[in-house]
Image 1 (cartoon, rainbow, N blue to C red):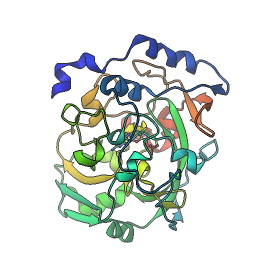
Image 2: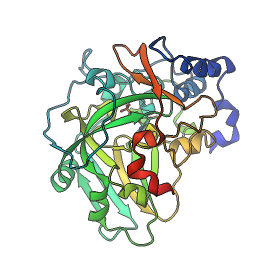
Image 3: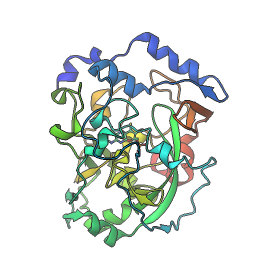
Image 4: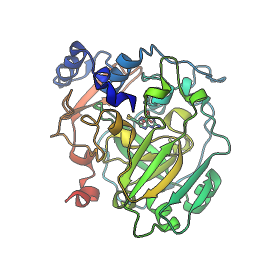
Length: 330
Ligand code: MTE
């Protein structure tokens, strides 16, 4: 692939790199604006200056088009997130969805994602392959609400009440064969819709793909979200269905899933293909393993208004979910 032939193109200027650790060392409410590392890497590559695309008629409302849903409380005894739920409007204005641009304000461009008649194809090494529409998924697997801490590899964090169903239910329904060892998840991609100005489709490993070991998918925390905050998902959060893996860095949670394939070998994934030394396949939240360009010891909690203020807190191993998942990595 082209980016392997020119790896240097992903590097970012030194001055930008040093800004982040300095920023993270201040233990207090901090004022200032900083883009995350992935965004910096991509911005420096693509020259993408902002977002555009067909925003539709949403005005200044990032939640336009969502509708209320009712989800039952989860039966799992989840740990208290230890911090308030992130305001809904704020979570909907601060996103990563690189198909729509390289900054955090892509919510408007993401409105061009076509979510009608959505289908998710589940296939590969399974006894019961099936293509589900969204209604099938909700009717078959139900809807429960789970408030999870959310931790991006860029060291910002939120707390989001998702609604959806455990991945394990789908896994059981399609009956993987004994040859299935990994699962590959693919996001929606259409070059005419998902690429903003400055993106160069041929030079990036689209579509966005993620992968899990089959045991990780079977873990009780692994979740498909079809809603958040008591409503259907807004497009910028990955409507109509996305992955949520609270013990892993956020990039593992691919958005707007259209294809799930059970495979024998570890699949190639988007960020791991693009910058393998920075974004591993496993990508569990770990305060003791720094990203090559910044520390992971602390995280910035998105707390208010236009994301100019942050509460800085220590990062927890497995993002606080070790009791559920540590066994997977023993
Ligand atoms: N999924 C797709 N298809 N494209 C993306 O760019 N970004 C990932 C993840 N899923 C991404 C994606 C990253 S880096 C993060 S941190 C989360 O989505 C952000 O989710 P949020 O915007 O809903 O908070």
